Length: 208
Ligand SMILES: [Zn+2]
Image (cartoon, rainbow, N blue to C red; front, side, top):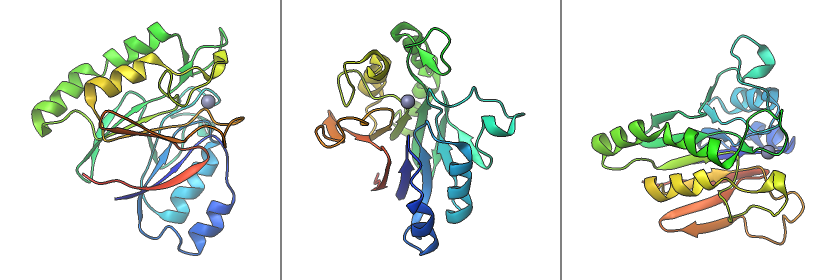
């Protein structure tokens, strides 16, 4: 299955690429956060395939009754697990807390509690399908992988934990890579998981 994943920065060129059929075999759009919802909605319109996304720290609190607080036609996957074309997909929004009043920001401990809340459903996946997760979508990178020293760009340890216990084949994230985009890798393999920094977009073929 081919995926168009987007994160953190609007790339207007994707509109013309979509129009010219460049993404004709893409079956799913994934949003890793910090993107204006109209951008995501435009991509849905152009490609006419489902969108799954997680909110970032620059996104508003999810609110289905406010037009600008969700992506119409898309599924907010924050703390949700779904099955799509036989892929088990899970989402985990937000990043490390660096402002007391920040939206979608969590301390390392708060992030752990959020991750723990997924446990019963992850176990159910393992019982039903023999594995917990195929694709993990987050806004933040894991701690120590693709993250940065600055408080706002430190990764979440709860994501390392999620990867360790669920062993997904793929982990897609955003949030970092603004300053050092050419110096650090955007793909890292940890165990059996391929960790990919999506910023600002990537086309990825995922397999079972
Ligand atoms: Zn961010």
